[in-house]
Image 1 (cartoon, rainbow, N blue to C red):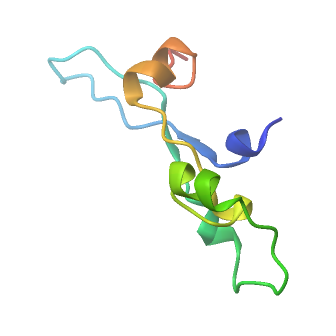
Image 2 (image 1 turned 120 degrees about the vertical axis):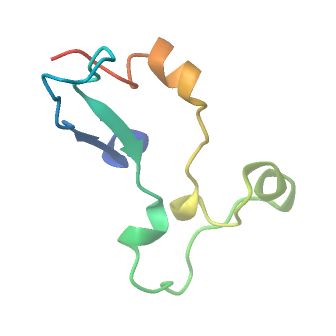
Length: 82
């Protein structure tokens, strides 16, 4: 299990028998890593300045890659049938 997997949450929305649209039985979303750190510990490892600019954060512990919804679904992380 990667660090990204620990940030993924899955839920099962209500499916109404009267909904005219095809049901989406399973949905997923990502939780930002800063929710898991109550305070910034001292001596936290840091990216190099150039890598920090590319990733959008100085600290690897706060990095969470952005994966567009279309790519998540192609990787099997988006909507699933139950």
